[in-house]
Image (cartoon, rainbow, N blue to C red; front, side, top):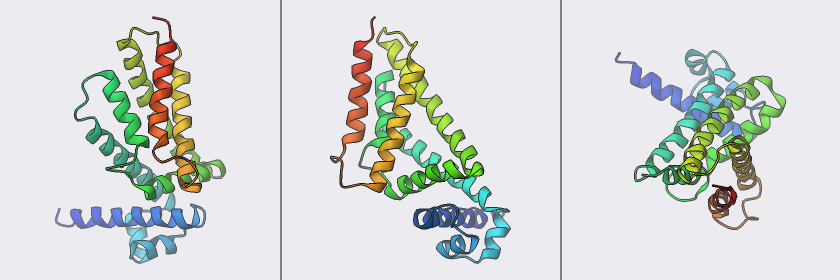
Length: 201
């Protein structure tokens, strides 16, 4: 048991090394040597903690998901209504401020782009997107129901919001100076409100 904290720390360092390597070179060019260099460790230590690069990627996606979940939990502490929880989710994903991490956004964009080419990355990315879609769909469904509105179109609304978020991440990483500051969260919230207002009771 005495070695467990050190082992967890090493694994976290390796995962962060992959994050930095992906941000610089993409997943395909993020070699074990480069990951080790960015982590400040030897390649042998990487192989001791992870059998393959794909295993490190799985842990990285979990880490990014955990960081988002922590931000959402922090923003939702004062939420009381379905609307509060939904908007806390949108702000956790898109708003600037406490908990915002551009490096995480950049790494996520690189993972998404690598998912187009590499089957092992695609599988992990699809699982992460499916998780976000399911969570957002539940939040939207609760909000619609609380407003006395039908939930029959919630799948398409949730899909549109996920697409908006992924697109916002891409632009934030590739063209950060083009869009107005802070546009993404406020625009997403307005679009949701207009959709709900437009639905018949």
